[in-house]
Image (tube, rainbow, N blue to C red; front, side):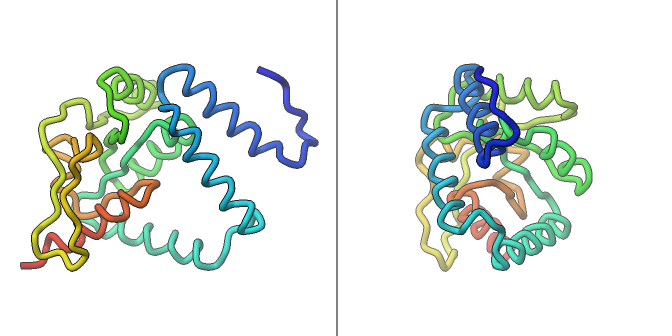
Length: 186
């Protein structure tokens, strides 16, 4: 890989791009993960590359939800594994929370690679290899969301479907959080 000078104004962004690109070559990240990352970078540019107050507030709310949850889950996809595997492991140990690999473009090979990466970085237990359950929304949810019908709905029975709070990096996971937070209602 080409050496990026630390003096480059986009140094960190370029390093992250290199990591994601390499992770795709290694089979951790699906090719659409590169697009998703680029979309995130575009928003970062639009927000003038600074953390806004609403993001700091959302961070506090997510932290509180994870700490207060009965069965919190940190959902890991290829991009997350490639960029912040150790951070997710540390977070899961400090809460404590389960880790689960949950992929939109799911393959056994990718799931196994991501689980191995997490375990090689110190994770003791990672769910997601045994795909024996499907995430469904309760019928009374006010968001009127259909159950997920894609491979993103596949999970371990012991993990995501029983979770009170699911922490991840996508709109779908936020919707799952809404589903899970309402699942305790009669």
